[in-house]
Image 1: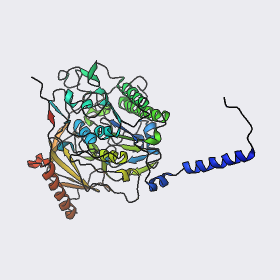
Image 2 (image 1 turned 120 degrees about the vertical axis):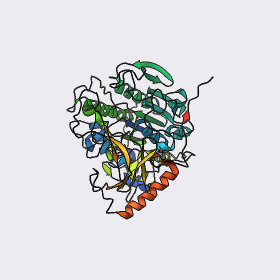
Image 3 (image 1 turned 180 degrees about the horizontal axis):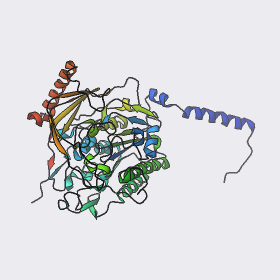
Image 4 (image 1 turned 60 degrees about the vertical axis):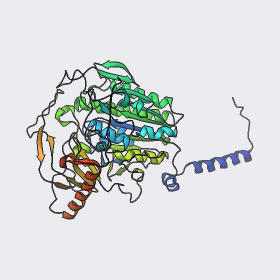
Length: 491
């Protein structure tokens, strides 16, 4: 115990003045920090990536009957991106783009890998984890991997120190609603070891959250990268007793509420460890909702179609970014960005070198900081689907579609409520279509006849992309594509 000796007035006065000076010096505003170019040394990075969560499934993005107070608070404390996209509207391809900063078709990752896949993301590619490892970062993934389940492709071979979760989607198990005999038991991994096979997933979100919080607690004294890739709300839907029946939107709403709780637990762990002002937290989804599952799927809001299509409902996703003291609070960013832009942005703020191989993403830090006159760093974004089909191009407010075949729900579709999906119909887009996404985000009016100069410019962009990455719709093989690695068992 420190004795309570009286102090002369002059000493008190002197210390009081010093305290005021220190307080003023320590209270630089966000704008002052921004102008000075200051940012904490080696900030922590947390990416929370949900599965099949629609644009309209978060309160600040217009969710109805679903409460998401933690995500709403995150938006109030950070920047809400209303024009954020994934590069491909399906699981494995989307994840490859997020982690490598590349269009997935450049890497030969298409669709959704399964337990029967013999290939995966090549270990020769550089993930965000591998960008950060040389900078002294601890790296961990909790949740769904889906970039190859065989040992050469597991997260621990791709720059992650730790892995707890599933190797692929949670519906790839013996209880699949349409193909129950198609899959083996669903493995739960700890690093490279299967520690359990799941017959119930009710505690999956809880387990992921506990592991994520534990990772933060154990690594709070050094820089870290945490990739929390939730399996939910991908079907089959499961929720713990904590949230069962708590929403006004049925089981799907309960699942979203539990994910929101998980976000709150992660943010609380950062606060507890004094890390909120040294951590960039990014929340987004891998693609739009799986609409054929009816009440077991989410909402695209005002956007057309959903998962598995290149329409806005399939590729435009909710995104929120928070970094207290370094990112402005309560702002809305309507300039376009994409998951491929996250790796180069993270490299920028951590002063890490970019991968040696060609990547497609660009630094969007000026957009995150809401800098005046900041623009999307990309002249155009290219939307691929299926096996290397260039289906659309987005440039600024314009989106040009090329003829392709896609799935849609029939006009008389009745939403199932039992977890068994309805049937899609296949339809053909027979001619090119052009949309002004600023005036017509729901893509209802084709304006291709009105803007021939825009059409010609975007067709030229598409031709460059085809030359670079190929286009199966036109039988073109790209000059700069890289093949995934195939597993060859030892003899």
